Length: 234
Image (tube, rainbow, N blue to C red):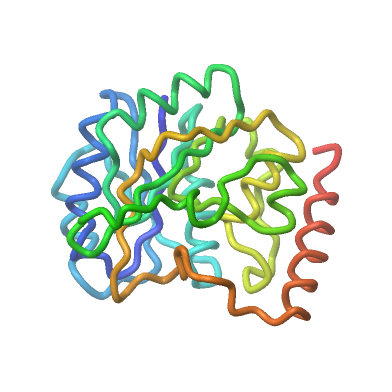
């Protein structure tokens, strides 16, 4: 069983297109878990009327997309968990390709085509900009992946959950790949399986450079390493 976890907040403009690109790749017993962070638009109304496999839960944790994703993952029932943003589009064979690797690996990370707001390709992929390398040290030095490109076995949840408390010092894009590289079998593939839409209301910086000070970068890494090592034995 596959669970697709989506964190939503005021995503009515693109959510239906994203959900349709996902639903056609899922089986009858698969599910989409939408965790909503208090949307005030038609996001949930559009999702509710689309398909019975879509289940909506509400984020009662601290607001923010990282905790919102944690809530979605916590409510997932599948053996395999795919993460999805609310405003992208999945390439048609994304699930098939990712599942072929998940037979041998615990965490699989794909590339993504960087697109503008109307899904015109910019000619670059996320990994071509950020590096896209595997390995714990490579990603501890500089995180090279985005959450929207992750799929993993739910058996990882014993170490992944709960996420560290201070979401200002880490994101799920950092936590899950580093956890996979440190404790599990992880595979980075070259296939760009997501149309990664960049628009005026994105909550993440996307392919842009970090604006964090050196002090904050060091603080983030110490906090992350301390949190990772704290999961030994779980």
